[in-house]
Length: 210
Image (cartoon, rainbow, N blue to C red; front, side, top):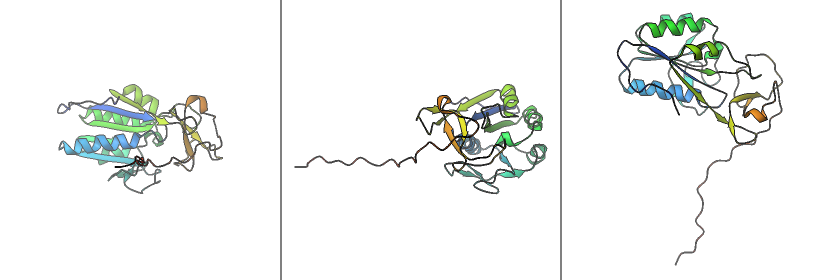
């Protein structure tokens, strides 16, 4: 169930956080909410940290290649300067910002803006990924999404690193991570255990016709 407001009063701000592990659809959900606000006639600004250039240098892109134009920022402080006339501010990959993002989110919400934040809530070792825990605490609305475990096929909320690198921040996608369930999570680094997902095909009708 997605926890987001259905009614947006004028000049009243709040914070929504969309969290979860890798491949759980966080950016997809942020884009969905941004598009709905745009359809409603609201001024929407979407930002992401400069370090996240996996799919595009500028656009916000989900793993499913859903795209939305965005702004690139080096630090959280820049977000306030770039979103002065926005009604809705969307911030992707929040875990790549420092703790100043907490003050930025509160400033924007106190200024009457709807603030939508997406990010990983745990790092590759299963530890809370700052500043996400603090953002979860101050948010009015929280949505936790889950992926499908690459090993067991059950619900996954851990991001398993599958390359030999123990830096806490390692920007990557399927080349570096797999979604894992709790009982399949082996930190800090594990071998790749998932198999490629086969495309859904239409079942052939082999019944004889008269």
